[in-house]
Length: 142
Image (cartoon, rainbow, N blue to C red):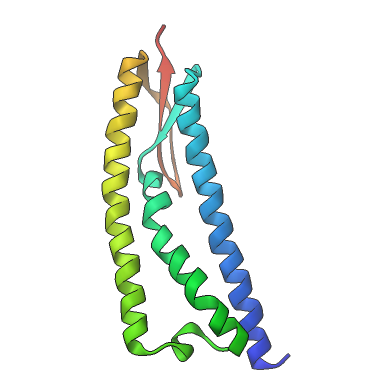
């Protein structure tokens, strides 16, 4: 297989993996929030994972904008774009990551407020620590 074709296959697979992972995590977090709004008996709050919807969007957008040109040429992104463009892409990713931290903190406080308002109590026994973060579990007290 020609080197350009290998780069295309790996680049397309990486792009699909990043988009798919982002969508899967966002769907997971949306499900947690909808469980809270629907007053489910057990609700999960994934504090660290809340960073992903906004924090990883910079990487996602950068890849979606820069990848097509690189895939067409069969080269790596850093071989197609200038150093200045790569610096701009890195800044975009960094700013989204910082905004993602603020979003996660704000959403956590919002969710905790709803948990208290809806009568949930923290369950240490049900809480999970996984590679994707700390998943705090709350049980409906009423």
